[in-house]
Image (tube, rainbow, N blue to C red; front, side):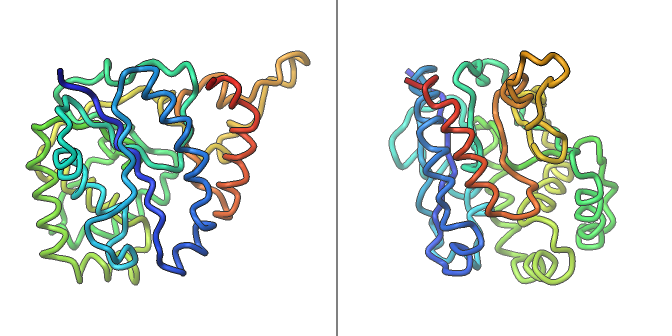
Length: 265
């Protein structure tokens, strides 16, 4: 019987610069158990993606390699799968989150990401010449932190891989020296639209991002009796991104987990 798979991106790079930049990736140790628990509850295969095909994760970031490895590694593991969700390890999932696989159609399912419009606009504009002034539709922009695929999308990811390696030097120049907005996400979005890949969206509650920017850590203080933070009360998947200091990711994820972990027993 075919199973749905949760491809959890938990790469701990051995590169000293990346380990220092990401706080030794300690936040992944908080994310992993809650996703394992949710998968077991919903009869989903938990697949921890913890080793990339290309060993140099500084030259070939894990954010890129996940798209090249997802189908390859799941199939090499002999899993008879239906759909695969690729989720970033900088997330936590609420204990009572509904099974989002039930919401998917035959389209790529993703989250419409427009939280930081300046960052997104600058990244799209920065790559526009590279894509021959393609008329990009900003309303279709998505986050790369959460995608759901089925076998029909293998070709798109294979095309993305070939494009990446064929244009590696130009992409790295834009990524590191000129645009500096994201790694895979700007190129990924252009490739989706250029290839006319249909994308279905998942409700916003399934991917709350920029928690500090939009006061998701706040609560209904006016009621004087309800101090449950907004992100726990109204959201299902919490993406710990967009902080002024990367070190805050681990601290906030740990505080959250310490407050809610009893719900996962």
